[in-house]
Length: 417
Ligand SMILES: [Zn+2]
Image (cartoon, rainbow, N blue to C red; front, side, top):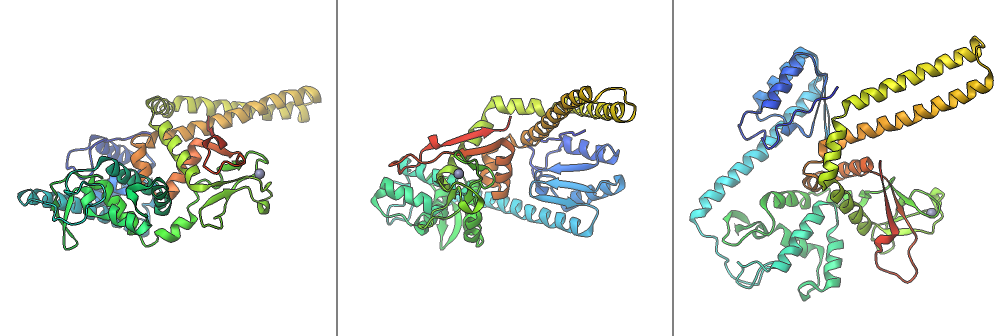
């Protein structure tokens, strides 16, 4: 039995009462819950005191397990609790930072954030204040894609081909633009953000902070090298082989049907556009109200789950009885036994599949709200998990001859039922 406790829109920091959280604590205390699953620890508590209280309640009730998207917490060990406390402290620090930023924002309203002049900043008109909308759109798009795991090099390549701003784009230049406080509508003085600018933001501040965190991450380059989102999901259409990650000679990432893994070696595809296509398809699919509704319905089907389990059990009992009737008691002959067994086994298989599908839907339902935000803010592993949850496979067909561009028609997405 699973229950969802949701205080939507009530941030752990808002200070507002959170009725569902209270109800959850009460249920833990009464022993009706034996594990807690939450997005992230920082969604659960707003003060060290509250966290310690949570530990106490769990202690008394003997609750030990807490799972989060970023990792599980063993509440029964000192290490686990230490981890939880650290996570809480980090979350509060960033929350404090955002209220400080807010305060700074208020203070800066008195000062005016005029453009101090100089070269026209990308995204703005020469007055440095009016947005140049087509460039602003590009900046926004670049930010979104980088947060979705794409490389700056890939985006620069596209901008160069499209002749954006008649200049040559290098990752460093793009990074400078994206990280400049001015794109978030902030004014900078001697490398410090001093307040709001008079111009409008291109990227909202929360997104910009995420981008800053991501781009200043020293592990980013090494991490990118391993970031093949679709290994295990991408298959060759010719031989059915699993496609493996293989950077090409020009260093662009690619998936290939490799001979060293027993593949036909006839299909390869550039990784970036393929991953982008898959990501977009998933986001569109999960963003649709119809699917969200279906998922909600599916996750509410605890009863269906129970029925499936019951039918699984009764079929298995029937199988045992059948074997006994045939082998031990000789009540039925071999051919009848085999026919009845096959039918039962087929049904057991189908029930197992249905059970798997049902539990997958539950996971999806918990993430289908704000899927785009989640996609952008969660890491690589989370994206891989999500892809695995919704796609059975991504089948890649061979390239048409003389067609150098990325061809979406080569790709077929097989959704999990
Ligand atoms: Zn192949």
